[in-house]
Amino acid sequence: MYEADNAPLQVREDWPVVQPEDLKSGEVLVRIAYTGVCHSDLSVWEGEGPPLPKQFPMIGGHEGAGYVAAVGANTKTKLKVGDAVGVKWLAHTCLGCEDCRKGYETTCGEAGVHGLTCHGTFQQWCVSFADHVTPIPKTLDLASAAPILCAGMTVYKALKQIGGSPGEYVVIPGAGGGLGHLACQYARAMGYKVVAIDSGDDKRKLIESYGIKDFIDFNDGNVIEQVRAATGGRGGHAVIVVAGSKDAYKDPLMFLRPRGTLVAVGVPKDTAVVAPVEPLIPLEFRIVGSYVGSRQDAIEAIDLAADGLVESSYTVEPLKNLPDVFERMHAGKLRGRVVLNCD
Image (cartoon, rainbow, N blue to C red):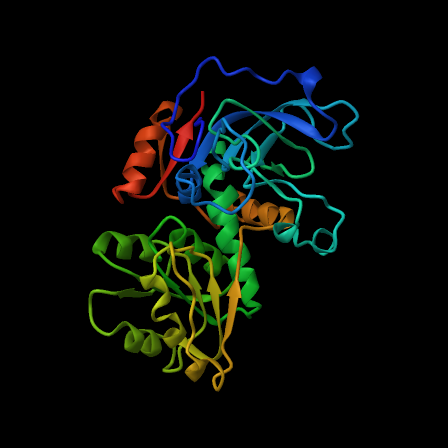
């Protein structure tokens, strides 16, 4: 937990646990077994998250997987004590506004966020909301589920934004990264042909293990020409930008064929997505933003993982290591995703 933006992280063993009788209607108490560590958690701690009102002290985290320990009185739900569930970025939404009614909970004006407006998953006992926790099938272990609850769901929803057809080409820069390796697998599961861009033999081997043949090393030759060569000379039908760097947004439009779609997921610091009028207008490109995912997106993303079509690459560390994980993440020394064991 921390008491102000960028304040020292504290590991507390005396934090009070909300008791079952103190839960409000609609709330559930979740015993967190594992929680992923997302770059958004670091950004929120550093004071660079979304402009939403924070409460302090704050417990971060939003990729939690665990078990229902208690359900608030008078809560209408099918959840039972002992059910495996996921706790995500979106803690709750109003479920009554136009956006919520249409399934676009991500743009609800009354949304609450775990780790930002309410306590998150970097703890053993987390209060969440019955309407928004995600059921986790018994065939998916909780450590593997944790990264899917944000990273996996986010790229899965981004791929749905394309509105494409099986057999079309999707270009994924940063394909071997924390979001990218999941995007590659979800794209394959959805029937797309993937053109993966990254660097190094380790990333190449990882991508090839998913059955993807087209890997482009961005340190080896002209990337734009190689993308076009891999896509029949025309470019991809879509490109998913998952990296949170300015450089990630430099060339993606050049990876597209006419009427192609750029889906923006990564959030760089102090930058804007600027597209030149030429070729944006004459080639009728689309630029689409994509922000986490809805309750249904989460269920679908988890189910694909439970069916063995998607597998997250991660290492497990104890919860007490979070300050060190943040330090490595800030320094760019973190390799792959980290899942914290909360036991």
